[in-house]
Image (cartoon, rainbow, N blue to C red; front, side, top):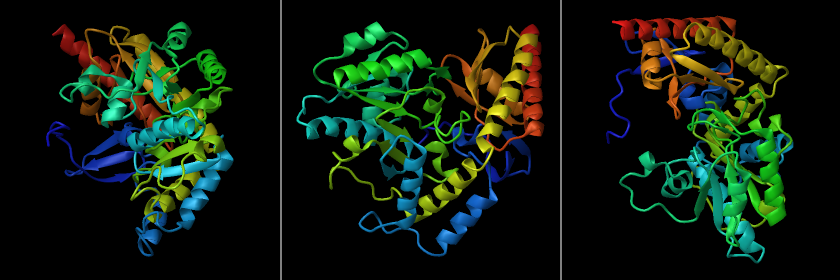
Length: 391
């Protein structure tokens, strides 16, 4: 199906922060599979874990105990607010599981009428029919019929609108601490704190979507750790296994205990291959100073990009983000796609987002050399756009 368009580049291998196409040409990868390849390409720890597990056991399904799944769950619980974990294969699946858990929690506790979720404008929670309805992006909904019911969308940073949306049927409030696809829009700590307070006031669950922000992307294991706010349920994926398909739903015990046997499941979720790689990935992410290095790299990258923006304010009008989740707001009439294409022409890979933002989501292992190279590439891309507009 042509739903991905017709990509013009094909890669055959990767090393660290670099990808090599079928002609041997090297690109600096500041897309990282859309925030997935946290440790870059062919990281020795992940390669070793995958090879070792592949020689022993690939798949048994969740009819049986999977020791590495138990180990990963225990580690994540010790590192987070959660008491229990459900493993799946992707971010969309994790969000579906999180919303199901929120609904099930209320039904299990005698309130089956509570099934709706409040979501935010500019959010993106995946591409299943339910998650398209949760985000209500007209472009993504086009041609798929009326959106599924059960979601009430409100403007960001508007507590009056959020309060007004609460009804006796409301089960949960769903939010990304930083809206990724929506344009690298951080939610303020005050807003998240008020959201938590309102959830507690009305007996609602707070669900965080940390699919893109989780597993070190912002310089904390999870982005909400930059605030004093914790959720009841959280969806994760992308960077959880460094490029191997994996997702997870993290939940407190009151929520998890409502998900009784048979209430949810996944054939491939938490399989031995995924868990071997996820544990190896977590070993690296939790090593001493690793996340501190992510913070420092993010600060250096943003500082360099602000310098470019100062020199080209007619092309880049703002830099925003956290850690190594960085967005450049492109000034009209230029577009994020134009800047991204110009960057690719000088061997830098990036990702577009909403609000005319171009994202940089590099591997978390980058150092000064890669940062300097990326900033220089954006400088060259801006110069190329400026020259083309003058012609």
